[in-house]
Length: 254
Image (cartoon, rainbow, N blue to C red):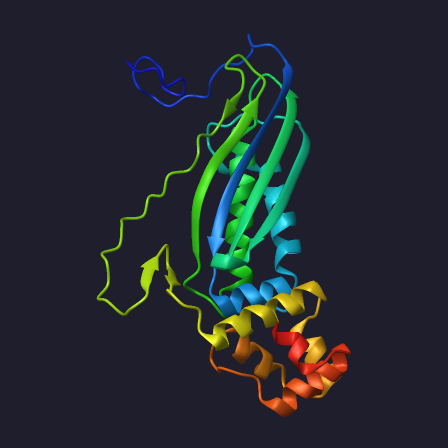
């Protein structure tokens, strides 16, 4: 009827008989991306989301999901996993987190679904951990990156093509909207300072809540500046933050 191995001659679903296949080492890597708001991304990066350590929870969830894949995907075989890993890449330029999941086995069938399930569940866990501040987060690009072993051999995914529709050119004088971001022809001074301030925090591993507490200022002022709700941190607060970080106020914005 078709070349789909999960269907029999009558088109009924079945679990594929792999008894005749060789037991070999097989490995697969998959990815998923979740796009967050600026506020949510900053909170996750600083480890200050309302529910706690988002990435730690997502990593454990992804590993557990890989182990439970046969219980979630009806026709998957139960196979012994010898490796299950989940890693994260923080993409600050678009407030996104790229999740990569790797699964490995020595068995008669592959681990593509285990890797894909781990990546997808890790992304959904990030959503669950942050939905209190960002219900509009988007999970996208769940796909297999590579696999090795088995009769079909190795596979490496081609470069990802964008599925988004092109955006019409806006009227002259307005910035163009591309991939959900604003690409302005000139970066406003306050935006440049915001980027520098964020880079300063990252380079010194400063967490907004702890830093604000040390400086004796409201953490809300830091978040308001990082998320663009205010254009600048008031001078007095900036001086206190600089004193706590043992730098000059201008060093935080260059």
